[in-house]
Image (tube, rainbow, N blue to C red; front, side):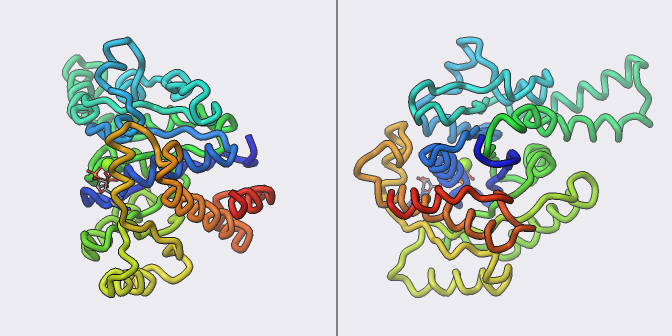
Length: 307
Ligand SMILES: Nc1ncnc2c1ncn2[C@@H]1O[C@H](COP(=O)(O)OP(=O)(O)OP(=O)(O)O)[C@@H](O)[C@H]1O
Ligand SMILES: [Mg+2]
């Protein structure tokens, strides 16, 4: 480990198709490229993050591998679920694979609860306590990676339901990815209200690491305006100065089951994400109380600018 403490960072926005998965995969691969020890958690029943690596979630299940559904349903520790890429990513990256069954996890947990009550093991008065315990299962599972991995990145589904809430409970930080085309201020307000409730009830330490504008067209005035509007709403310090440019390379990489860090023709895109990581770490040096890495390792800055 290079960070003094593990940092768990979730990519969240209940809006569909705004760059959560693309960013989660690229940020995870970028940290790995820089020599950090990283785990990427795929909590989305769509399993797009898992697919991005050319892995098939269904095949993994058939082969008997654990997935993130086991963290919820069997209280499995993330350390037991981690899929190891071997030498790919210099051995610096692992994955907690997604599972199509993650969609029915809330229903299964609720019926678990109702059965416990019907069987007389628990009373209805215990229900709140049990639901709280269920919402904390992801946290309990991911906490087994603390002091093992520098960074844990969580990709989330496009909703504000159980899976999102349990992610916000588990995370130290969240990043809000936004596309200029899908920019929706009301949606972001609702997200921030959910965050406020999670902070109040479960996770007072949850912090916004930044708002990331992706799929950005540098030639479009509208896109620039949206960057400015986001800075007005969230503050210039919170919105990342780094934007991720619009490029077909992003989708190409996903379709080929490789990350942009593995494709020579996507080096420009990979550099943008290294720039983003550098910005995150720079924030750490400037604002120690807000940092991703409270004691940034200086060598990273040389590596990023020379890489
Ligand atoms: N910088 C970019 N330039 C062009 N296309 C992009 C860029 N980033 C992402 N995309 C494409 O936009 C689509 C949506 O991106 P992505 O899957 O990351 O969003 P998401 O928020 O995870 O979606 P969902 O809510 O369905 O999980 C994908 O097809 C992706 O390849
Ligand atoms: Mg996604």
